[in-house]
Amino acid sequence: MSRKSLGVLVAMLLFATAALTAQVRRTKPNDFTIELGGKCLIYSLGYQRNISPNFALDAAISYFGGGSSNDSAGVFFLTGGARYYMLKKDTSPYLSGGVAWASAGTNAGPFNDAASAVYFYISPGLEYRASGGFVFRGGVYLLLVKDSFIVWPGLSLGIAF
Image (cartoon, rainbow, N blue to C red; front, side):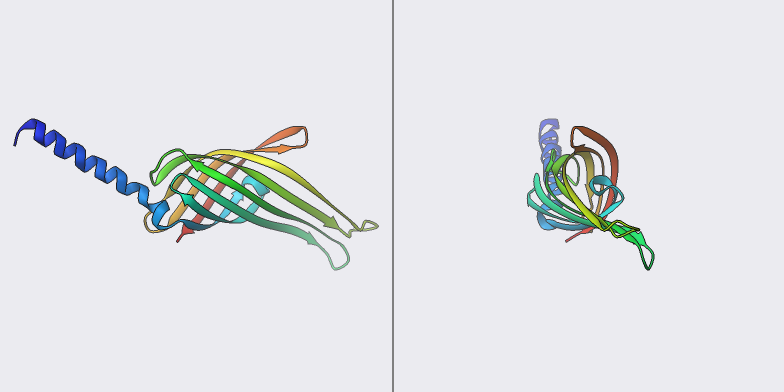
């Protein structure tokens, strides 16, 4: 076998292997994750659906609160957005963005009040999606709140199916 034929064979094998690594988002397009930090500040439970190997839609929910038998306060978050993957591989940088709705309420002391707000987020990050279904994402969120922005880290762990 000549060197040229061997080179073509090696190139074809490498190309075929690279094409196979892009299949995880195609064969397991859904995932559930828990995110620490991120767009909902403390934690969120999220669902993502990959529409194509490079594009996905996601939604997340979060609630935290506390109080006593007489007083309580809580904050509820609901988010929705999209994610664009820059590579068709199991490990890929991404850019995501969306909108979040936050609603807070309290009946502590003399207060019996509720308020809500909407803010936007943008996040560059990195995702690893294993063929067994394990999903890891890490990113930095830019939360666009009123006339300012907050930089906030986020780390997600989950399962793809």
